[in-house]
Image 1 (spheres, rainbow, N blue to C red):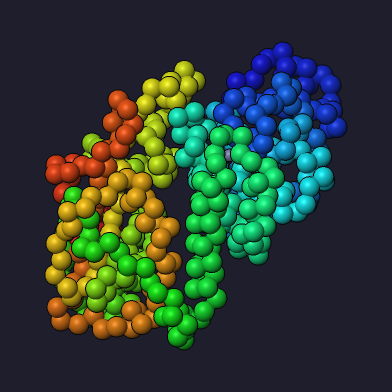
Image 2 (tube, rainbow, N blue to C red):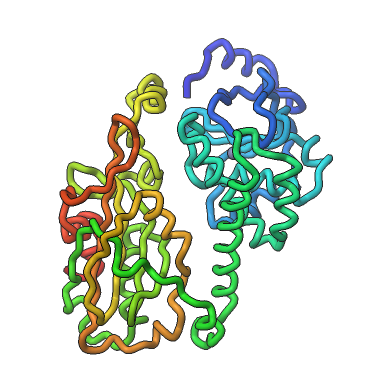
Length: 399
Ligand SMILES: [Zn+2]
């Protein structure tokens, strides 16, 4: 960060004013919960323990880290800001004190959702980012015990400032809400003795799988001596964990199951995963910036990006591919549609003769020209085995 030498001297000369310290911040990239305006000068006011506790709780319920600074300031309500590489969550104590707990937590959770998703608040992704933040909010509010009608009432009371309809928002908040409901139901059951888990139907993976994937039969030797589907699942998950694929989702397939990983960005040169800053972003972005201009340019001039996700299918059924293709957005949504655990009835099912594991890799390219994703089909950049090796998953599976 550049420090203005005059300001630096001024800071040395006089002690900081705790009550009203100027908050030096470029808030051009932001979401503000309602009202699009922001004061020109923002001041840093003393922290509120209550708000800090809520933010901590939201991050824990949303399975995310606090990768931002929380500041009480003179914003209208609550705002998420990205200034260069630094993220802020700004809030008005006036807003906090004049509204109900539900209303404040909804607004905070929406803004935390922007940071959890690594959003950049660009005009062209505005709608997508707002809906993703709302989905996160629905997830957190469900886990916190609020009801959909409560949230819907609030969405009506304080509509989005970004031209999103109530219906659009209700839909994605409901998705987040349902996802949390499933994950809580499953997590509340002890894994080893949970007949109720099987009463929750594991969602089916599209079958046969959508076409345009590269596929590879994982060598039988990887699972030699394995007796149950649960054994196989644990080996795959250990290999995925070792390479940072912590987010994944379970589906049923005929006589077996499928594990889907989160959509990730990879390097087109060699098939390795991109660095942690860009790997999980769902739009193209540079790994490094040569300077401020380069950084700003990246928002105006789209980058080219390569995306992939892995699906591991364990079944004894032969399968081909359906004529249906899958879009990048549909594939990314798989992560939210499946279970977070393999039900016991499947985990204890025998991994017997005729069973094997096939890895499917779906590749997408987002070209520089228009950012509209293209499925890499029928000419994938790499074959499935190369993807598995370069991602490091193959090593964990022993080939
Ligand atoms: Zn927003």
